Length: 181
Image (cartoon, rainbow, N blue to C red; front, side):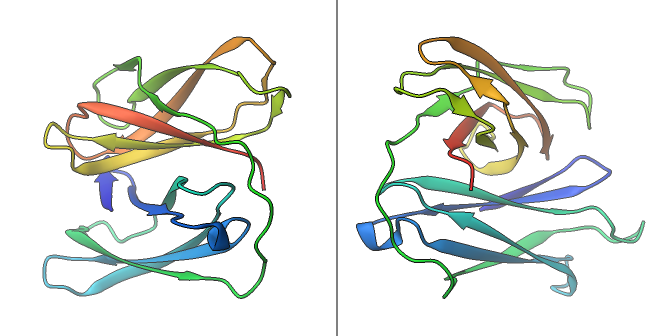
């Protein structure tokens, strides 16, 4: 886990993994406390994620943009649990994790990570989810972003862009693709 802050908002990223078939189809709930330097909770946010295949990594992203002007997030405290709602299901074909092809506009609050994706499945992917995780040179998570492409036709390549919220200069970003809920 880690977080990014662009001066306007803070984005926590918690990377969760499915390790066995029992997780497929289940909803995982991620909760994050945003803490200041003294350990005081500034805000709490939660967000669900759903596993579609064994071995899948889901970056669950939780934003916090309505803190007071003098509040500064120093660290996050994540927690995860499976929801009792939902049940295991059939695994879907894994989708790839993409490495960024470029990161443009190094100005704070305007960074964009770009990815290239070729749909090698047998079906067009419609309104699928892309969760981006960005790393610094030490491979520490420093933020991320998301995108929701409308269509990736079978056998065709599309370019995906995601506005990212990061702390510092990202060395790389990875896009985790997932089927719609």
